[in-house]
Amino acid sequence: MNIKIVGKDLKATEAIKDYIGKKSERLVKYFGEEFDVTATIKTEGGMQVAEMDVKTPTDRFRAVTAHRDLYASIDKDIDILEGQVRKMKTKKDQQNMTESIRNKEVAREVDENPIEGEIIKTLYYEIKPLSPEDAKLKLEEKPQDRFLTFINIETGKVNVIYRLKDNKNYGLVEPEA
Image (cartoon, rainbow, N blue to C red):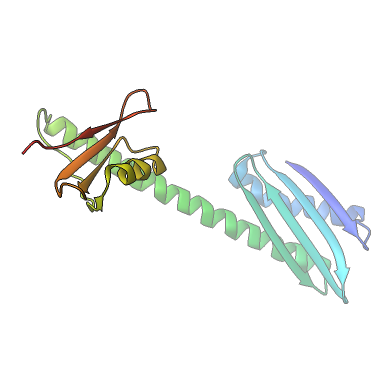
């Protein structure tokens, strides 16, 4: 844990530094020693403002409060930061739990039903009337897609335009009858 204290229009005394260090130790239980705290203290219109910024390798948390007493402002900042961290940790834990449940369900389905040679996924999308050139332009707009199904304006039949393996040229599938 690294602590940096900046005083704007207000001198950071040794007592204030010790107080911020002591209060910042409440965050150790969430991050271990892998975080940095930047505290900025200043006065604005008779109020003592404490601004605390906590940076971890993956996240950043920030709190700003104003109070007549600087120590009360620091306390409020730590409470806000601790709330933000708890909320983020709870959210990540819930995401991890639902992901692990989904993974277990998928693994169970695969173990129970080793499916081979069956259609297991169906995608639905809208087929629009286009000319082959317009379809090529539309496929170029979506580099992640390999093909596009459309109704050929000229023939009124369903066609498929697809990107060839060289990713430069295109192929067109057209029914004969």
